[in-house]
Length: 249
View (cartoon, rainbow, N blue to C red):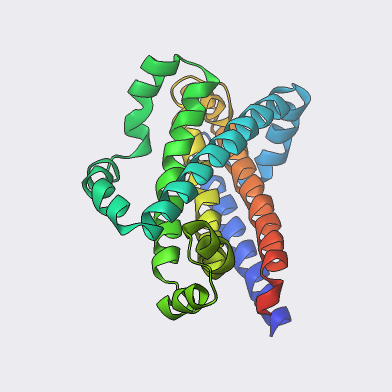
């Protein structure tokens, strides 16, 4: 079954790349507007040898990791506390309803005003994009914990909020929380591009620079770079997730 899935996946990828290659070669679109896949290796090598690719990847990874850590950490903290204490949830309910619909890109002007055109502005925008995903994942995970487990814990003497969290709530909500973190991994990459459109150096700013020069092959190189980086991180995260949740196997 697995071999069949891999074979079908490979066939689908080949068909997709073949169609992509055919469109500019048949003159349906100019290669400037849609560079064929066969032109991308040479474009990547030029960008890599110039040192630009490594520099941009390094900068964006720094923004990504720091922004993700801040957003995920604060989102998990606030989500867990509002999930545990209903009065706190009621207190913040309308604040959440006001702030949640605002897209993270809308915070870009304030990020520039507060931090300037600096890495801190990019990190802030990425953190906002990650925060809400992890916040609702953590809050929902706490709410989903079976109340009977909490009552049993209290019967065994675990009455403080800290004891209930460590012994019952955290182990029970961890699988759902990890799902939220995995979702946030992808959201963070989308936020990276949005954050770097403000002029902060990285993959997003390099893509904008290349597009202004109609170097669409370079744009596609960086699009694929982000796809590969996300894929590697997602696979790594899934491995860590399986290890942490090995008790469920």
